[in-house]
Length: 321
Image (cartoon, rainbow, N blue to C red; front, top):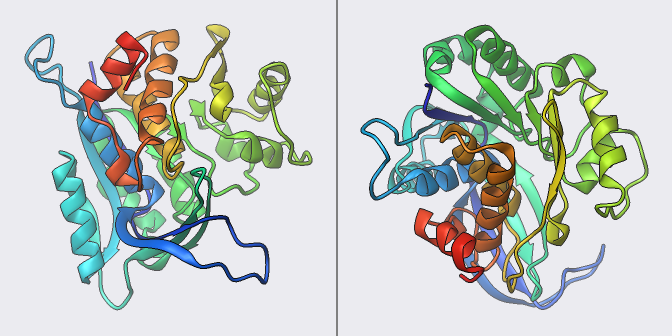
């Protein structure tokens, strides 16, 4: 059984400002705090998967899930900081390239008192993660259970990775964020598509709106008609909804006090991949993913909010963090 998760995507240094409320266009607000935190949707997913894959005693020798990261950073201190964060989470980073003459990617994040955020991403070295890099990853794809992808790297590279994964027998999970239109040909190579409400509506060319569980079945079926084998709709405090070959089901969110929603979706995807790689059925994997995201929103930052395995299992067993 394949037991590696390969995350291919972005690595950013996040510049995080705390604010009492998010600014309107043209408005200046006074910040309450400032931090520099390792981030990037790809690295966030890798670090979260790495921390949650660490178990005190795997059921059998070799059962532990291995997590690897592929992408690009600049030859600068920001890149070194990101590589140290990956190592601290137990993530192998041999497939992260060092790029000359360009800065490591960055993100400017405002977080308000309720935990909501706005984000501006500067790709930097992430834009150098090219389709030509994919052939060097084929050996890793032959060994991995899941390839996790996002849209903060060039779309051509995402498509090349999906095609290579299909050829090498790896299953794929695509987080279609930041939101953008995607071709049916690309979506047809995705095993699990994991949009939030905004991303789902954009993919279906519908006006953005709040989506509840009563709307989720129609939305998920419409998304599956675009090509992915299965869809998991991430619905925030309404939990999530799954539509796939095994049928349809919802999983409720865990009630927690949110401090910072940054990387909650990334942590959800990481938890889902870890659970599925360990052989959990869909229902158990959805619940594990919801618990993972719930723990993450009670903490500040992106990778700094990634929960340890014990944190997730405590919430699953007791309903408390």
